[in-house]
Amino acid sequence: MSKLSNTAISILDLAPVRADKTPADALHKSLALAQYGEKLGYKRFWLAEHHNMPGIASAATSVLIGYVAAGTSTIRVGSGGIMLPNHAPLVIAEQFGTLETLYPSRIDLGLGRAPGTDRATAHALRRGLDSGGHDFPELLAELQRYLGPATPQQQVKAYPGSGLEVPIWLLGSSDFSARLAAEEGLPFAFASHFAPEDLLLAIKLYRSRFKPSKALKEPYVMIGVPLVAAETDEIANHLATTPMQRGLSLIRGESMQLKPPVSVEQMDNIWSAREKQAVLSRMTIGIIGGANTVRTKLERLLEVTEADELMFVSDLYEHEDRLRSFAIVAELKDAATRLNSEQKGNLLVK
Image 1 (cartoon, rainbow, N blue to C red):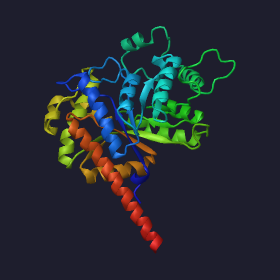
Image 2: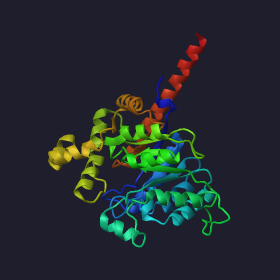
Image 3: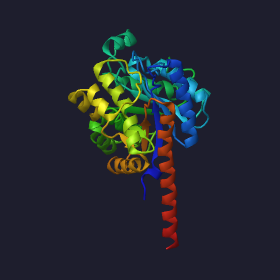
Image 4: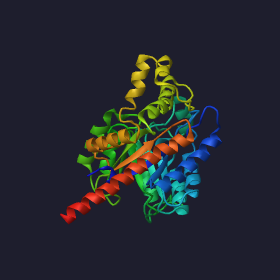
């Protein structure tokens, strides 16, 4: 039986900006991708908060979530994530309370504790908040109070927001959020699309320490997965040089605008051996290849992690290549579902 058929698939988007395009183009492409993902049966479309990063247009994450939700009808739209220490919890409760009011039962609030930027920009964002992420559990508790049922003694309430119980996810790339998500009984999303080294440890900690809650009865794990799916392995490896160059730019502190793909051989002239190792280490669970290779890698990944949901990120240069990448995974999931159904039918006949 294929594990893929029973695994939810979702999309993570950073509204990537091409070197020869504008942020407006990237934002319109984000909506187009969400609409396409909805047609393909993807469960969620999440947007990530980053600041002061030319090449990423999703800084005003809540605003962009509203834009995407308005242009879709069934797919869940949310944050992957909102970096809570950058904001007053009341503001986030009001923003997501408004989104939930406008688009009921379709909004997710994924939370992280990193700044999502460099130190100088973090200071500009957090001026007056006096938060470096160390008080994340307290900020989370405050936010939960604003989104939960109001109490008679509660002086400050979120309108809209109070009592809406917007689903909260905890995001992380280490064991900190895994432990907190387990303690709070919340779903957990691991950022393995850029920090895969602690993935299995974090999942194990989360599942072993999970405490059932009003929000969630059993542990639920989503993992981030870099994706480059194409017609052949050769084409996919070529297209993958765009996210590789993007990862290299991040390491070097350069603009993260999307660059066109180059040959695999040309990459050796672009990066040093140390830089190559650093970039590829961030992509160790990346799914890169033609359909058959992608199927094999996905089944192996699910066998090892037993993830409940896979959230794919595919920052490719051409929009059509991105769409095709997500289409291939959706087609593989549909095929796995049909196969499992046929196998169950055969067992019943026997």
